[in-house]
Length: 334
Ligand code: SF4
View (cartoon, helix red, strand yellow):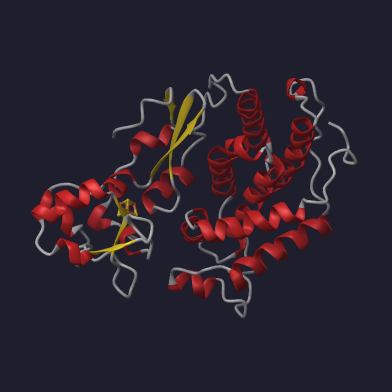
């Protein structure tokens, strides 16, 4: 698998190299999700020359690019009944986006991080079933002060999650920890990270937390765009909530660590690690209560929120607005 080389060293979790697409044996193929699948113009030109009537299978995206057309059931027009890609069968090549998926590459100042998305069932199995795959997560070199701070803080957060026997408590402690981190960022005290006494055992106040999760559910259940019929059914506001707490402790911990790996450093642009960790907490909380099938919940959340700009930003927007009145100065100084 080709990886970017112009953004410094590339780091990836242990499971990254073990991924292999199940193709026609996939239980829940990405080609049927209903996603808009973009196509680069260079590949389109190549396919036009080699595949008959190719132009009729794509449409303009309104921004100068192209998208593959979808059938009414959400499957890509090139997805054949044998579960294989018709375009690949004809040309021997996958389009660029499909050849990368479910891999992602995040480029930072000085290094690149690669990973797999839990939206693919095969990747999800590798991520949720494995042992701790993020060894050496603190080994990143950068000249960016805030990024360096976040890399160190993320390693501390991972250590806390690994050592906390209850992953649900670890998810709450992550929020409290990030509140302390936010104060250091806001007061430009980044060098105080190791010296600060974070009370990482503290949890969110119960009442605030319940209100927070209720509001998150309301946004997702009543206002969000819904792509797949299963998700629509699971997030029907009239559907009684699942009483069971889905997933084993090991699976929930692995999901929490995946979210931390994938999202924590994004605070380097927003400078809002507290909001980022509340977003992580929201996704983690949703996954435990949607249905009794934890793998289905995690996969759908990734497809419908993580990979959906509109829904992701609606949640992020709510969290940011909620924290608008938050005053780090009045919170306990770490
Ligand atoms: S969801 Fe994953 S395993 Fe299934 S077809 Fe897509 S990339 Fe392959």
